[in-house]
Image (cartoon, rainbow, N blue to C red):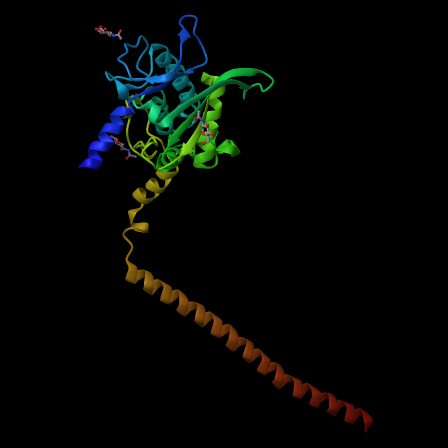
Amino acid sequence: MEKLLFSLLTTQALALCSFTQHCDQPPYNCDTPKPVSPPYPPFMENFTAPYACPTFLGQEVCCNDDQNAAMNYKYFLLDETFGHTVGGCDICASNMKYMWCHFTCNPNQAQFVQAGPVIYVPNPVSPQQKVLTMLTNFTVTNSLSCELYQSCQKCPYVTQVSAMQSPEGFLQFQGYEGISIEFIWTTFLFSDGPEALDLELLPCNTNVTSMFGYNIQPCTCNNCLNSCAASYYVSSPSTLEGLDWPLVGIAYLVILGVSMIIFFSKYAWKKHQEKKMRDIQPYEEHQLTDSLNSSAS
Ligand SMILES: *[C@@H]1O[C@H](CO)[C@@H](O)[C@H](O)[C@H]1NC(C)=O
Ligand SMILES: *[C@@H]1O[C@H](CO)[C@@H](O)[C@H](O)[C@H]1NC(C)=O
Ligand SMILES: *[C@@H]1O[C@H](CO)[C@@H](O)[C@H](O)[C@H]1NC(C)=O
């Protein structure tokens, strides 16, 4: 009870925002985000653009109208990079949107996002150019990173980039790409402590057309590893699940028996041939001595 009360109190105390961003609209032009110091509490905001994060609809959030507009643009890019239009998996794209929604809008933002210094770093797109960027640490659970990676693993873009071949590599790469998209360089930290963001993500083989408020197309074996296993087992349930194990045992015995028969017949044939050779040889020698004798006489 005391523990519950304590965790309730700390959750209340942690309902704070850690960074903000402002843009001119129009023309659409965003400043580098900046940490808010001291952190302030979440607020109600009316968005002019569609909600980038339907999951927080009607709640107090840490993202303002400008950030919502910026997220819509970023989410368009996510769809164009990971979604079905480029042969990818919409569930991967939506899981990522959901995670970035929590990063930008979650009313407990300050609990898992540490907004740090704003500095010039090389632009990943054109490294000779420097961009003013805010450094952030984003603490997530290990299970979140694994689930996200599993849903994205087979997207064409992910398979092509060697840096993205692990859950951690995948996330750090996403955080790095934020430099050129939104002037945020996010470093992911992994922890299973209470400060880490933990989310229930959807596996890419889930058969849905809507998730977290986004309309999607279900993924297939072409872009989701889990779907391949599913289609294999579903289309031929008798191959593994419905196996008749005694029958399998008998089949193995038959195979073993046949192999032994083949082995022993070969062995017997070889022995037989050797015996034949032994029978022939003395005869030939004998014949040879006979002919030698007759020619000598
Ligand atoms: C949002 O809209 C509602 C209703 O239109 C209004 O009462 C409220 O003051 C608005 N809130 C903000 C933060 O602008
Ligand atoms: C991010 O984490 C690193 C390593 O734990 C730490 O050195 C750095 O100060 C952190 N940055 C912020 C903004 O908290
Ligand atoms: C997915 O669900 C739809 C409708 O619920 C159904 O028609 C379709 O066959 C399902 N697809 C798979 C692969 O299970």
